[in-house]
Amino acid sequence: MNIVELAKKYGEIVHLRFGPRVHLVVLSGHEVIREAFVEKVEYFSNRLTFLPLVKYTANGKGILMQHGLHHKLLRRFTLKALRDFGVGKSSLEENIKKEVQIVLAKFDAQQGVPFDPKQLFDKAVSNIIC
Image (cartoon, rainbow, N blue to C red; front, side, top):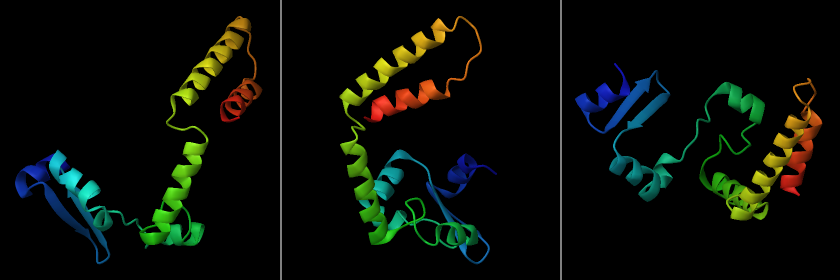
């Protein structure tokens, strides 16, 4: 049975349980999803922290598997840093377009001869960031 069929049979909010510790809440429908992730975000923002691999590799740290106050602080810092780099600004988009044009011109200049584009891409990315 797929998610759409579950929603038709049981409603827009479906709770699935996999074993004693894994609970999955499936939301379907625009209003239900909006309510969950905008109006009641504190109840739906937890990350999977019980997975042994996550605990072993990240030692409880990182942006993907955090929740609560630490997650809010880390997320706020990350978004500010990205904004400082220009993410979301039209000026960044113009820089990207300009670099893409340069890269495409360099590809055309090779006239079908194989070459390693790594250095070209490294320079383009560096120019965008700087």
